[in-house]
Length: 82
Image (cartoon, rainbow, N blue to C red; front, side, top):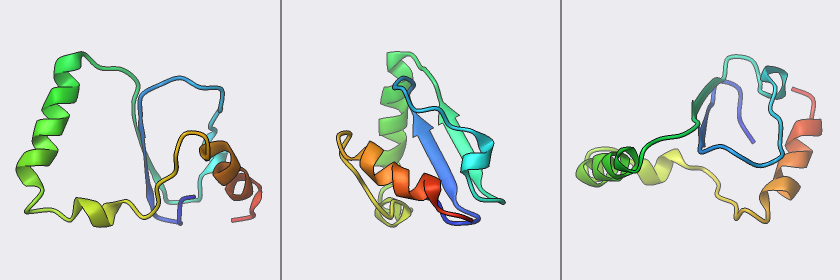
């Protein structure tokens, strides 16, 4: 799910999956936003909207999964040896 040296961005909180630093390859970066006020979500959307033509946001995301797929997609990655 994350290549060595990759960045993992977690937005929101909840669910039953527990993540440990040992679940990620060495030299990876983990960003997490646990909660925010509604105005912060609007600021984030405005930020992306105002910079879509300067930054390749579509290239930053290499894979997407629906919420019902995430557990299935996550398991093979967690059991692989890095």
